[in-house]
Every structure is written in structure tokens, then in C-alpha cells.
Length: 353
Image 1 (cartoon, rainbow, N blue to C red):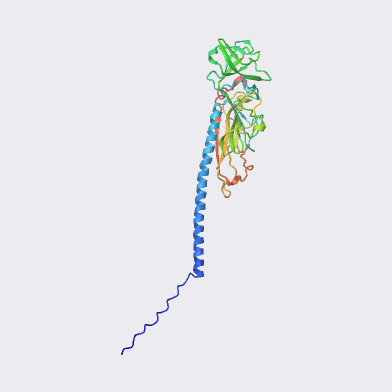
Image 2: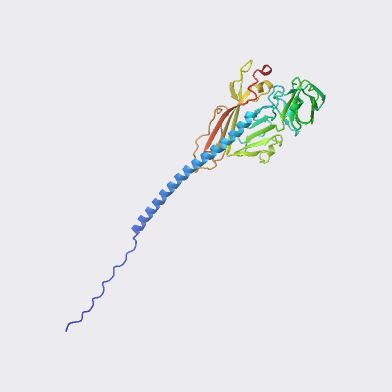
């Protein structure tokens, strides 16, 4: 009888092995290397993005600010650049006195300074389409009434300035408004006697006395006919000094002066910030050299600017950014131009200047 086959016991199963410590460490190292590579790529990509976007933002801010200033400067002096009134003090309709009427004034003494190491600009011009040399005052029937050859060139609401036949040593004029025209007379809201044989200047209905300054890294403007731009307490008031350009950190300007003597030749010989003190000195200013510096709005993690920007006038009026916190961690763009004061260049040799 055959013996019954007894099944042999099953072979013991092989024990499943886990991940060894060495394998875990190798995996951790590889994972860390991958993370570091990804972080480096992200950092470089973000840096390139910041550089591109920051440069574009600074480009746009600076270009817009310079365009605004150029447009204003080109109009500077229209209707107020005539020798009998340039450099005179002017009583404005709001009761404030503008010292030294001029097409463009750099760092006017009555205007509070902007950010450290920046300049301010005051630009004055009229809007009339009449003669910039004014109309002769034939008679003065009353203190506020002037007889002129062409009264039709004046309209109710126009701003006017009357000047005497002979420029006084202490020259104080008054800006008033036309309240009526009855040929041959132009009647104004106020007047001063003694203007017969003088000139009546028409500044139109919208004359401008605009002051520009950099305040808190913004290009701001103050309308002197509407606000008291000389009030230091309002220097930080955005309702008075209205921001029109952001991320603008510096504004620098110089007069372009014709020093040719005895007669001017309408060619700029020197650039400086020396404020003219006489009518003849004002007549010699025929251009303004200007620089605007804008910065990127995004701050870099490390220094990306080694030194402050420069411009054509850096020898005497450098661009300084030391007052700005962490200024080296921003990128900057400098925009500069030379703007002729068009309403002055056609007056060479005026009154022997």
C-alpha cells in the first residue's frame, strides 16, 4: 500500500524590506538640490521681471513729467515778457503779490523748497491771442478805465495789466479783470492813475501762474491764482500741491543766459541758477535746461544703483539722492532737455540790454 504523500510545509515567505536610512538621506539631498535649483530660477526670473517692469515704470513716469514741464515752459512768458513789465512785482486778483514777474523762475524765494536737493519752477503766461506788446493807453478817463486804439481786442472777463509810460524804479503792477468794454474805453475792476501813454496788456481769460516742485517723491503743481503757494504750512497739502507725477525723485533746472555785450545775439552762453535782478537781466534769459529723475516703484533686495544719476548741469547742480532711504536699491531714469523760452528769443537788444 502506497504511503500517503504528506505535503511539505510551505516555504517561509521572504520578509519585505523597508527603505534604508542611506536611501532616505540620498532622497532628501536630491529633493533639497531640486528645491534650490527651482528657487534660483525663480529668483533670477523675478529679478529680471523687476528690472524690466521697474525700468518701464520709471521710463513712463519720467517721460510724462518731462512732457508736462516742457509744454509749460514753451508757453512761459506769453503776454508777460515785454520789457516794461518783466521783473516787476505783480499784485494778483486774489490779493497776493508775485515778486519779480518773469516767464520762468527757478527756486522763487517766496516758494517753499521741495524735497532735499531739488529745484522748484514757477511758470507764468497768458492766454490771449492779442499783441504780446500790449495796447497803447491813449487816455485814462478814470482810475479803472483805459482808452485804447483797439478796444475790440478786449472782452469781459479778460485779465489785464496796465503799465506806465516810464518804468518806475520800484515797479509794482496790478492784475485786474475787464468788467466792460465801451469803445474806446476798457473798464476794469481796479486801476491805478498815471497810466496814460503806457501799455495795457491782455492776458486772456485763463492766465497761468503755475509752480512745480518735487514733494515726497512726486512731481506736484500749485496754481498761484487759486491757492497760496507761498504758505509753508500747505507744502504737504495735496489739495494745494496737486500730485501729477509719481516716483519722481529729482527736478533740476538752470537758466540759459545770453551774456553777449553790448547787444544780445539770442545765443545761450552760460547756464546757471543766478536769479536775475533787473529787467535787462531777465531779458537775457532765453532758455531753461532741465532734468527730471524718476525711479522704479519696486525696491530690489540688494543694491542695484552704485551712484546717483548725472546730467549736463551736474558740475554746479548735481543730482543727490542720499536723503532717500535705501536709495541704492532702486533703479533710476534721467530725462533732460533744453527748452527755449520762445517768447523771449525774438527780443534781442531790447531797451539797450
